Length: 527
View 1: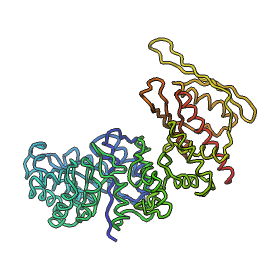
View 2: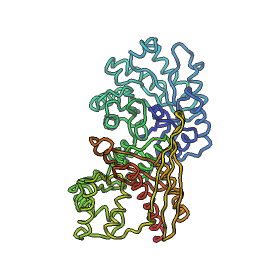
View 3: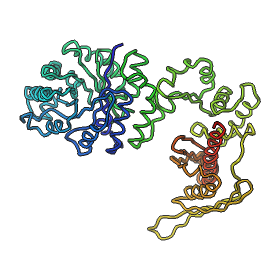
View 4: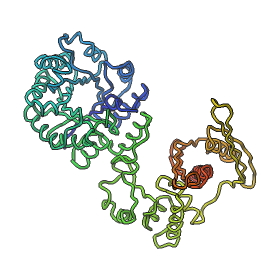
């Protein structure tokens, strides 16, 4: 099986994306995760760029990586500067990594207008930089920046930059679509021509400005490239880099090519989520292969077909990439959706049972009022339990009140909530204070219940979204509240709807707490 080398640049090129930042410790953890995943190269940062990247190169040496090689990134020597005296080159020496990757100019426009040097000097800059690192025993990856633009502008000069790197000893010649403007058919034709002209050690580095970075990378492989550069989740400048979370499964499952260690592919979703977490960004639900919606089915006919033959509406088995099938519940649901969702949630029902029709009827009634359950599966589970008369309330509300107090102009408002509830006939009256009325209500509810159910102490709200359902009604409009909660292991969504935003929030909060308690009960039964 032909093998494609995977070069991950999440920690360097990916970190240049808007809103993306890794802590020093986070970079080490990501590198260890990528090594476990099975990538071949991990680009740790720009050696001459900042202290954090240099600290990474020092700290990663203390780790025992199983497979991946660490690469330091930089550029060719500057024009008319001896290579041994160039600050950037010396920084790459200091990084002391087994692999050195540096970029050089392959587009004459950049050579003459940006670097303000001659075509011949630029070739010497490329060759000198490759040579000095090869003399020190380094593996050298040469990134031909703006290669496709340069090739289309001046074919022979672009090729001459590759030959300069090759003849000086570069191990891989990477063709970079730096502006992200080249289309797949162009990538294929040019990469094929380059492989014929300069040899087989060709790689590809694409950006997603035209939304075809993944397709471009795959086309380059079809044309002969043996090395792909990209980032986890497509992080990167502007519209991002080629997304390894799509490239890797396509190579392995669709093109019958090897690129990871054995067993690595089923970690794909876990790696994607981990990198998002380290970068402190919310996962993209719509991402192919690894997103929450990648194998989510909503239309009744689709669900019915998937239930019979999964490949009828799924291009791969979700488990191959560590994902899972999800059945969505909405106004488009049929009995197949309800049945599969109920079974998925652990209820023993069959399609012909009257309970399925009753659940569907109740679902339709609630959705007319503004409830949505696609992002609120915990609330749907509570709904099914109630219809099946399997729901046991963990507490009874006797009443709550919320006060918002505003004092001086320059002081923020403070909210107070008081809750009275009972658990197994025992009453509890508690007050809470928060930044807003919902926060105060949440604090009071937790205080009231913690004495009876200490398990809820570990639950936190990770998202709170409000949607006005009928804006034409102005301040009398119905409000939908969606809450996302987590206990550190599980994450669940709940929904509430009311003309009163506090009441809608209360509904969602109650479902959130009860779902956690339900999970704890299930855990006890299994043990």
